[in-house]
Amino acid sequence: MPVGAPHATVLGLGIHRAERIVPNADVIEAIDSSDAWIQQRSGIRERRWVGPDETLETMTLEASRKALASSGIDAAQIDAVIVATCTWTMQTPALATKVAHALGTQSPVAFDISAACAGFCHALALANDMIRAGTARHVLVIGAELLSEMTSRTDRGTAFIFGDGAGAVVVGPSEVPGIGPVVWGSDGEQFDAIRQSTDWREVLASDSPEMPYIQMDGGTVFRWASFEMAKVAQETLDRTGIRVEDLDLFIPHQANMRIIDAMARAMKLPEHVRIARDIAEQGNTSAASIPLALGRMYDEGQAHSGDLALFIAFGAGLSYAAQVVRIP
Ligand SMILES: CC(C)(COP(=O)(O)OP(=O)(O)OC[C@H]1O[C@@H](n2cnc3c(N)ncnc32)[C@H](O)[C@@H]1OP(=O)(O)O)[C@@H](O)C(=O)NCCC(=O)NCCS
Image 1 (cartoon, rainbow, N blue to C red):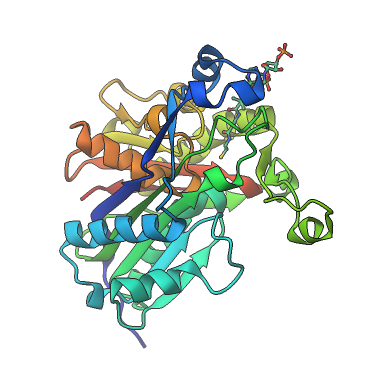
Image 2: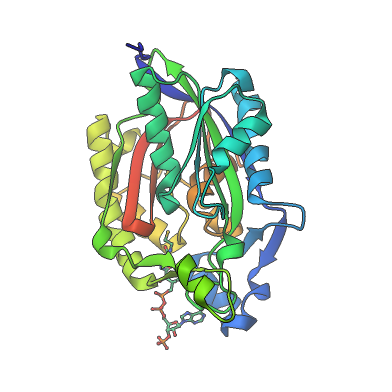
């Protein structure tokens, strides 16, 4: 029987922001909107979209290499690679297998998971469990999305929301807890609230096939996220055995600035807890949003090694996952 580590911890972070900065001015015409409306309703000023030489794979590799470097772990020590994404356009094989090979890892277990915007927190929870169960020692966890390719430029409810990027962490064994218990779940009754516009079979049957895009019932998602996720956040703190005052950082999925504010109010976050607001300049990058948001907090001097952060992510499914993390 494999022998697991007593605990697991995040050893290092790497991020990659897509290179093209796209201000609101560039998206408003096609949806009859305005910079003021987008900022007021979503908090987004600009988003990042891929440049001509960037792909989902290149962004994933960039973030992964930086995560390995910052954690001081060699690619050969990685025995599992998990990619959370909803924008890898190959049904099979998994992007994780390609990335693992390109990084020079040695035949690790490698797979993708589909949990939309909650994917990074799902993958982190799996890594934590694998290390403690002894089925892996060092796990590379990646959230990566190329959403500009799956965004309709004329859909008023989504054209201004999404961005591209990737974030990765290396998770390894530890004597002390670095990742708290996960609270996760889904509400399949709301399966349609955020969805791919068309099934691939419908695309093939069409006379003028088009890339499917992400559609959503903005109001439904907004209400669900603002109220239900604050309860999940509290449950996560309770299971971890800490109080909201013990947190240093609140890093929710970057879906909408008003959702972030509503959650912070519902949780009664004390003033000293720094709140991630990466969405303003990055847009919503689904599975990549939490590591990207953490990256900005380091860059801006808001996050420091050893800080206690609450990660909470939610999205299509409607799926969600949250955990408390001691950041590297
Ligand atoms: C998408 C979202 C910003 C829309 O904001 P909203 O306040 O719900 O907007 P509504 O759809 O209720 O529309 C309000 C008004 O703005 C108008 N409107 C809608 N989209 C618009 C746009 N892009 N530009 C300008 N006006 C717009 C509507 O026509 C409506 O006008 P009316 O009041 O005259 O009828 C918001 O619902 C949201 O962010 N939801 C959650 C999104 C999310 O988190 N997604 C990711 C989950 S992982």
